[in-house]
Length: 440
Image 1 (cartoon, rainbow, N blue to C red):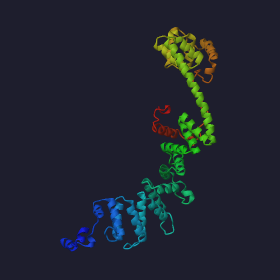
Image 2 (cartoon, rainbow, N blue to C red; image 1 turned 30 degrees about the vertical axis):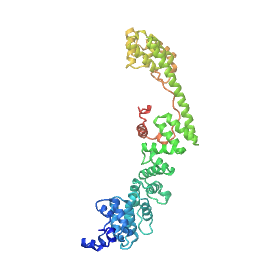
Image 3 (spheres, rainbow, N blue to C red; image 1 turned 90 degrees about the vertical axis):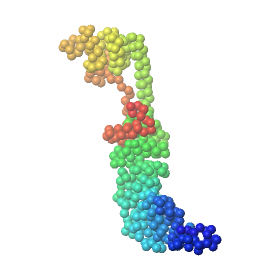
Image 4 (cartoon, helix red, strand yellow; image 1 turned 180 degrees about the vertical axis):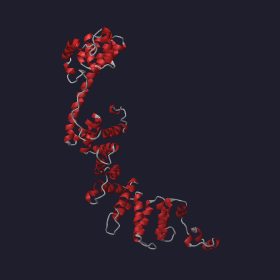
């Protein structure tokens, strides 16, 4: 027990000893040590420091300091492991050198995220000079240390797993273990080298570490940082999953950064997007025209326009369904019915058309051996709608938007469909994209 200073100043030191039988200098206990005995991790470390320095009235005792430092280490204080590691590694007064125990304590401190401990662990376990080299042990420590925010552990571990630190540490390349370390190093430092490593290992479809969500994240980080290839790759990802507006934006950015392939892809995609916008505008105008006719009760005009002007089975189906619902199929021209019979099968609007033809007594192809009798009508219809029917054996025109001729650059585009679906799923669950067209 420590004797209050005011007692000694009053000459009552001897009285105090008489009042506390058995007290001695060895029994002096600091408040930190008391708190340590009750489970205070930091108190254990500070008590160890008091003994290590012989401060606060405590005797200098390296063994006692080591005991308290170890307790702090076990309670989660990495400095406790680190300072004790030095004592055992090299030996100090009262503690014999125990290099193996020293490296174990450095290693433990590293796994807890202690930067200097990771440096010491790297220096010892990587070199073969003293027969202590153990790369698997070192790499495991780096993985744990990186998870606990040691930047050195993240960086060195990523470099070794990626390419053996450019061949300096061969035999340990492992993309699956490298990728999360590179990602963490990228997140903490923003260094392009580690961000690009992360992108390479996460984004390549043939990589064992392929991860669509992380690939999108890492590629976007690199593109934002001005890596032209990353912008082109991000454009390729969006291109492959059908988000063409975003694909164009990334291709264009790659182009502006000097990527020639991105320039070509952006040009082709922009041309297609313009065509698509024009086609959508045309469809909107058709929607308005057909709707106006139907609203006015001009069912024959709506069907005739879809057949003769638009040459569109889609709009013809809309007009026929509306006429049928209104009980006005009788308004539709005989000739248009015969054309529609050739366009549709027997279901849906095709069934409605054939039913109306039978009601009027118009021969339906394939029924009553009517083919020869109907040949002239079919021939006339063929001439009239040749452009719409030329590419299908059933003479059924199918209206489509403009064809997308350009191909995405990223190798992911040529990968299996499941790879594209992984990218699409990741895209649609990230950043509030669920309402985008490709996600519905």
